[in-house]
Structure formats: structure tokens, C-alpha cells
Length: 503
Image (cartoon, rainbow, N blue to C red; front, side, top):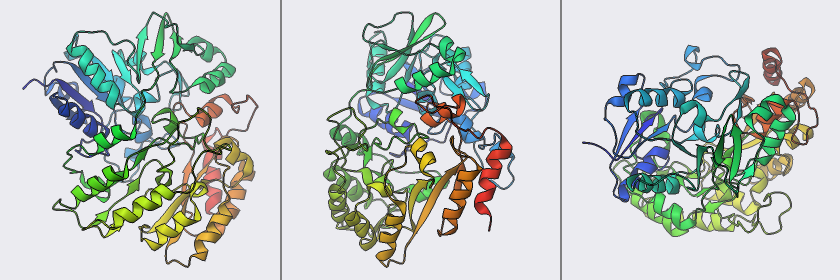
């Protein structure tokens, strides 16, 4: 059989709404396309097993950048850590490897990039593992087009265009390489300019957005990013109600019955690129759609009554849809509804579904966006699986400001939660060695952690492409070009983490 589309991916495929390729496969099939999948290829021969597709190859390393997947924050290979349960088969710089293999065997067949690794490398970017700036991923892979962020609308448009023999210009949510500069494009500093000047790299970072058509010159061509398409509640309802079998690999069994309620994140944390992936506004599914999905889950033979996780990038952002302006939602917006009323209403309706015993919020909440009524609902409704996960990230005011995590009052939230006299506890996630953090700030974090239970989850900051924090790491400046301290040496990074665990 010759498929219309063949996906080549660096992770295991599973027919589930949490799988990006799983969702795209189901959507393409709904619109009449046949789709094959080659998972975790380890040789050039592997990518030939399904032959040439009629339309294109879709290429992705998966939900995680291959270098982040394969290396620790101190650049040690994870597969060489005898204490880590690591069984990944994705290649380093998987997109470049896969595209080279496909170019070798299938000359002339269009290559379409997608996924996190492609999305966050769509312009000139700092590569932590080589400690240098690299060109946009389209240059290195020689792919025909790249889908950034959410891929449903672009992938259908690309399939239709190729089927009809049309060009791939002006498709929303995509990037291409071309010698022509569109009139409507906002021009970013060129690759040559950012290599020559760290100040120019800060300008590049400040210019990144999904809501404009952007252009960056690389050698004699331009990378063009076309504005992201608009997604609606109706779109998400359609996508997440596709007929998935929900069969997952053993490693994901704990999330087999997870449900996505919304997309986007209005947090704009400096160390996270999610707003440049899913957007910085919330798009929530309808209550009716989520109820239908969970009702259908109750008929599956392996469903035991538990919804493993209910949420999105942050569970309690459900219902905070707005999109009436382009300003940052958390910076004094009087329109943003922080009451969590829609989410509280949803939880009560979901608990009433026949066959549902528990609906858990396992992936964490934003404590600074959690109303007291919502927290009470989590406790009273039995929505806390083991602990309620929150991510203060740090406690030092200056570091929190650089992280853009200085909203809310952590101690007030802790006091309120403990006043509910629940048998559940909070657990905390922190980042150390972030730009702006010296040993003084690390010791301040240590003192705060000593007074907290379940505060052992600490990550050494890792500079991933396209985030504000990575820009700070590379340039040694904040986004206003003020010089800041950056922990560069392995010695200091390890010391900032070690001190957190002192008695």
C-alpha cells in the first residue's frame, strides 16, 4: 500500500490525544488521507520500510527536543547514567538525521517538519550543546516547509496544496525558506547580525511572536514565519473527540485516561517557550465536548473509573479565554477572569458522570491563579492524586522577576491550603542556576526549602532554544540589555544544586 502521508518520528507512536502525531494521523484520516507511521528509526534503511508517500513525509523528533531528551543539564548523556531509567532511541539532532536519510532515498518527495524541536529552532537560535548560534532548522534539514506549534490546520492545508500541485507559500502556522521578502513581514535581525552582536540577539528575542508574519535573513535567503492560524473551542472539540483507541506504551500507562481541556498558556515564564508553541492566550474546549469524551472513556474495557489527569499546560487556566487584545494577561489585566468558575462547574459535572470514580489533577496548577473556591473544590472533590503540585521555581524576588514568575504570594497560598485540614500535601518544583542566580540566591532558596515538605524536586536550568531565559544565558543580559550574573561553569551549577540539599 502506498500511503498519502508517512510520518517519521523519534518517539513511540500511540493512538491517543496526548500524541501529536496520533492526533494528526486521526485528523488526516478523517479528511480522507491514508497515513503511515515509522517510529524511532535508527538507520537509513528504517525510513524506507513504507516506501514513498504520494504527498509528503512528516518529520518530527517528538514532543521533546532530541538534545534535551538525550542529555542532562550538565551535558552528560542520559543513556550512560546507570541510575537513570532511560530507554530512548531518538538520535541526536534527529530532524537533521532523518531528513538526510529521506533525501538520500526519496529524492523529490516533499519533507514537512514539525514538533517541538522544529518549532523552537525555526529562527537562528542558541544551541547549548555546541555553545554557539545555529542557523534555522530549515537550512540544516533542507526540508520544504515547517509547521510550528499546533499543526492541525497547517497539515490539512499542506496536504491539500500538494495534492493539487500548488505552491506552499502563505500557509498560516508554517515557515519556509525563500529569496522573496513578503511586504507584510516584520524583519528580525539577520543570522549574520545576531552572530556578530549579542545585543542584536536580544532584539531578535524581543521580536519573536506567533501573531505576526516574521522574516529573518540567512545568507541570501529569508526564513519566513507566517502568522499562526486562530484556533477555536469548536476546533479543539473536533480534534480531541476523534476516535482514538487510547492504547499507550507501558511507560505512559499512568496517563492512558488523561483528558486535555485547553491549549495555550498566559503565564509567559521566561524559561518556557510554550507561548511560542501553543500561543499566549487560552482556548478552552466546551464542557459538552469534555463530558462526551469522558463518557465515551467509561465504555472502554480497561477504564477503572479514574481520569488520570485533567488539564492543559496549567490545569487551572481552563476557562480563562479572552483574546480581546495582545497584551500580557497577567500584567494587571482587569478583564481576565481569575475566579476559576468555569473550571469548578466543569469538575462538578464530570464527577456526576456514571462510571467515574475520580478525576485527578496530577500535572500541577498555577498557585497564583488558583482561587480559594477552586482549591476548596480540589480538596472536597477528591481531585488531588497524591500531592498537589505547584511550581514556585524560586523564592528570590530578583530571580523570580527574571523568570517572570513573581506573581502571587507563596506563603499565603501554603497557609490557606494547610487551613483546609486535608490529608493531602503540597509538593514543589524549583529551578536553580537560572540566569541572575548566584550562590547567595541559591542559599536563600535552600533556607526556604528547609521549611517545606516535598520540596526535593529541583532542576538545574537548561537553556533550550527560543526561550527568554536562554537568551539571557547566552548574552549575559536581561531583555532590557542590563548585565546579569549567569552561572556558566559546571562547578557553579552543581554547587548551586548541592547547597539546596544541605542539612
